[in-house]
Image 1 (cartoon, one colour):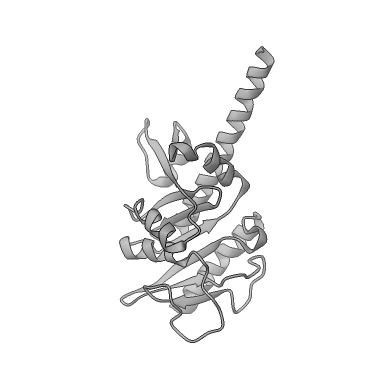
Image 2 (tube, one colour; image 1 turned 90 degrees about the horizontal axis):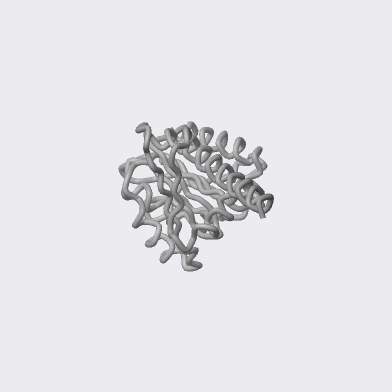
Length: 209
């Protein structure tokens, strides 16, 4: 099971790295290995995620501590993944920093949420109603990780979801790796669409003026 989950997470890392979503060693990924005891693989801190090595991940427990003695350090935001697995049946969680999700988080940060309606990719969040509204919360980027984890935890209410951290990145989770990646891809599409739409509206406004 451990090797299988390792390879599954490594494949996701490779795919996201191809999209340049791990600039400057940023981002972190996690996948659940067992429920009882709760253990999951998480990316090791400070690694170049464009490369595949035997030290990309380490196994941690319900407190985010390494299960076995190792020189590797779990990602700084491991506690966010702990909150997800502690409160839901999610099997995978992904966190990336992109220009689009950072800009969106700043544009809508004061509102504390960014909302999408009438977009096909909302279905990635298992929302199938014609008039469905998707709201992705935006939280403050606390430097103190336990405080950040507490704020983040308030928005973990389902087995899948997404939360933006202002000027930091997005964390998504799903029942398995496929669903988590689907939600991440859909979120990034929606952010890019929204920014492009705002650009076009500004362009049209400038033409009129």
